[in-house]
Amino acid sequence: MKRPQPHNLIECIRQNLGRVSGLYSLILYGSLVRGDFIPGTSDVDFFAVLEEGANPDDVIPRIRPILEECSRHLEPVEVDIAWEWLPNLRDPIRLGYPYKFLTVYQRDFRDNHVVVLGEDVIDLLPEYSLEEILPSRLEKLERDLGQLRENRKMMHILAGETARLMAFLYGSSLRKSDVLRTLEGLGDEEAVRIYRSYLEGRRMDFDEEFLRRFILSRVERLKKETGLSYSSSRV
Image 1 (spheres, rainbow, N blue to C red):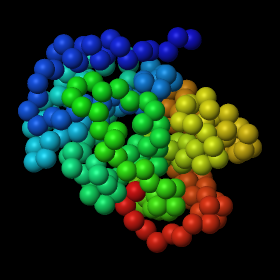
Image 2 (image 1 turned 90 degrees about the horizontal axis):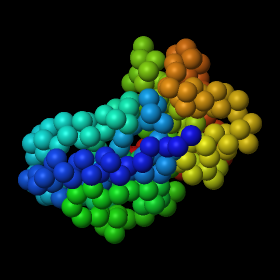
Image 3 (image 1 turned 180 degrees about the vertical axis):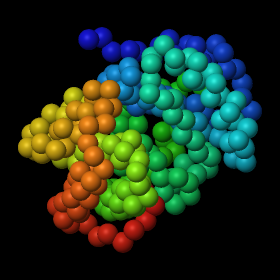
Image 4 (image 1 turned 30 degrees about the vertical axis):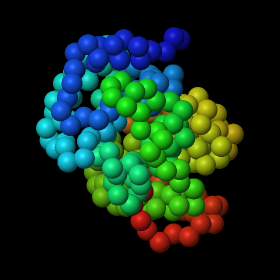
């Protein structure tokens, strides 16, 4: 099956958005650039880099309608717009918000991004070691789980992210077929079932207790297998 390409989306945005005060750069990244976007399952992911002092409440509402309209033909689950101020990219963990694509999955962001408007920011980003970012990433999964009650949709998303992180730590890229193949190679049938349900239209096949147990047990397993120090942080 031929995967959707980003060219028409990028051209639509460039033709319709124009100059936006306070917007330094608009970057498209993730599955659409990587080549494994699935209509009805995947998101279209943008990163808006704001000039220092710019108000996100002015910039993001200005660009969102056009990004959503230009993305409509792709049938995404949602159009996600992450944002950060330009100076904070010098150290997203300590200065800004530690998005996964700027920290644990930064290599995929470096390899699979397109500058739609403005300037590239890749050279500004520090490259973190796994030892710096993994402990707090696993702890964040636990914290996020603790905040979810009677929200099966978000718990399915969190369980899918747990499965993807497992595959990544065992050598997978973020390409969906690679993640699934790695989970199958690990022989983790529950992780495979959870990830397959995501690939097949984000089906919600599992009850809350199953998902909770899966997330906690896999996070604990990864903590033990990595042997890193866990003391909480921000990733």
